[in-house]
Amino acid sequence: MDGSPTRSNARRDFYERLGGLSMAPLWESLHQLVPPQPAPKYVPAAWDYDKVRPFLMESGTLITAKEAVRRVLILENPAMPGSACITPTLYAGLQLILPGEIAPSHRHTQSALRFIVEGEGAYTAVDGERTIMREGDFVITPTWTWHDHGNDSSKPMVWLDGLDIPLVAMFNAGFAENGAEDEQAVTAPVGTSDARFASGLLPVDWKPAKQTSPIFNYPYARTREALAGLAKAGPPDACHGHKLRYVNPASGGAPIATMGTFVQLLPKGFETAPYRSTDGAVFSVVEGEGESAIGDRTFRWKKRDHFVVPSWAPVVHKASSEAVLFSFSDRPVQERLDLWREDRGGR
Ligand code: 1HN
Picture: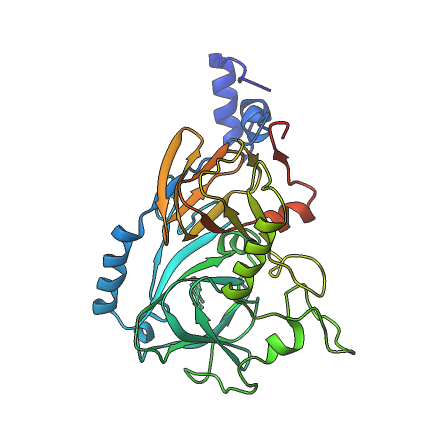
């Protein structure tokens, strides 16, 4: 499967005539269609928040959240210009909402995750319930749920949006609708989903209707406590440091069916063993500083920076101070399809 047969004039002529019937010879593309190992057409890349933030703030002077519907600067893979994709299956962007603004209500079949990068006190509302967001919180907007955002605080809020847009586009399964009002009616007090689902308890007769987690906001305060406990309890994993996955407590699966979300603590001075997996992943730096070698490139990073690791690219993270990394990928989809693989290099 490594190289195409030679192209004689007779073959070339045959291919051309065949093309007229919308047909093609498999033997000319077989090696590309079934590569011996993943050969992604996208690349490692990083976004330095010191460079990104001025553009975000400038966007705030050019358009309101309401006019933009969502004021987001897309993180686009440099090898896929114009695609609005950070990987072939994932979309990522940084969203700005200024004090007093609202982003109007709508719903779509694409699922979204929010990871709060800067600020405190803005809310997002999903199907009648609001949650107040703080740095490091991971908030979900499940498929086909009404959602709008507002900022009642006195500071700009910036979060990372992760959506399964390219995956849904591949299936041609995208639907969207605008709300009748900009802001949906609030029908449940803040903290409702937290009280019902986030303490290792579930309402006695509650049955999940979908794969989506009933937990709305996974607050950083709890995540950080878990990471600190983990770091005290035992040695770090050679490839991951202290790494956890966010979970739907009702199923044990990922909170969103299409996107897995993860958080890891790297102790000061820790260097991970080379690792690769088939899920390309987007990272947001929550705390600390360090660098990551991804394939043949190395990126230095600090709090609020973002970077992308392509499928099957070997990665080594080095933390120069204690660091926390959030990440998301399409791993749950690959696992469902029995496709996901990892290479721990024997560790
Ligand atoms: C969307 O609805 C949001 O709700 C953010 O905040 C980014 C990108 C594409 C399509 C819909 C949001 C989005 C989006």
